[in-house]
Image (cartoon, rainbow, N blue to C red; front, side, top):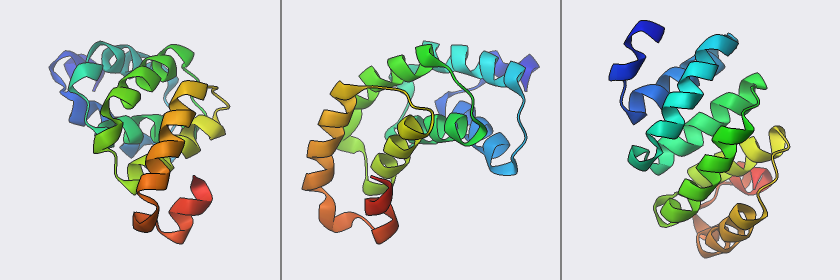
Length: 127
């Protein structure tokens, strides 16, 4: 994956990170490279790409304050496109790695209230 990283689009970056996290396989060097590339390509990330990326980092305990800070800004810009699952996964990820982002959490709180009827009970618990 590292050899081809420059050719990856946002979905391929997010999906690869998600797959490593889902399998439970921690590869910090790969995540370092993917975090840099993700930050460079954040303008092309969808709401699902954003939530999958932070979820993957949190699942493996991978800490990247720079990535989480950059994603906070991009997530606020794209918050209208987040569905309840994206919201729940993003909030869970930030809480799991203990990354503070008050502006993002305030914005997500408002958006979650607007979409409350679309959340599952698990989604509400995670949010």
